[in-house]
Image (cartoon, rainbow, N blue to C red; front, side):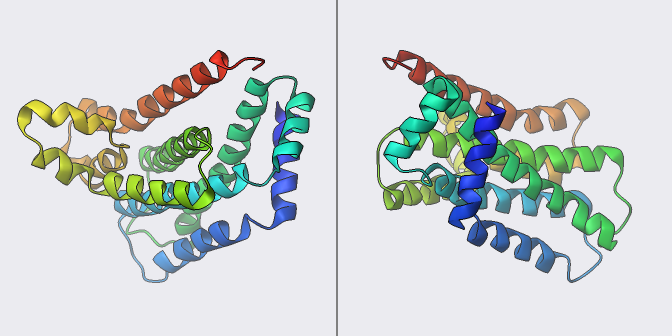
Length: 234
């Protein structure tokens, strides 16, 4: 699977489809810290939210790099459809992991924070970036099963992004009995809530909010691989 992921990444880099989303993200992170000092967790919340958005663009480009014929050949090389799809997910996650490390360390190295981040703040920041990007990777991956064209999926992702950013308002707008429905919304707003209000929250409540994207990603991955397992010759 790792060798397949490496092959997919090499093919992706040759296509140059990585450049616009990755450069845009790096440029935004650099711009964020032109003015100093900045709060730690609030800044990580902003860069993690942007990474969530950019990951949709990046993953969609990655999954569309291979032609259908080339994709079938890669499936044969990988040994099964499931291993091929897992390799595609790993390739996307490696890209976003590199971007997460950039967002985590650039402000530290520049001395752009109001204080030197603690180990907990660094761990929270890294987790926020990785978990939210993984949620978006899995959302794009599931949408790719629908066979819709690039523009249709991109428009769907814009809708998902809008709902994710406005999730807290949507949750508060819903009647009390319907508020559990808000758990269907990608939990970007829950992570933002945790990072912005960490000093005022108890440890269990803080960790509970941060656990939301991991649980969301687990459900998406289970749904995707269950669907693949039901396909003939998968």
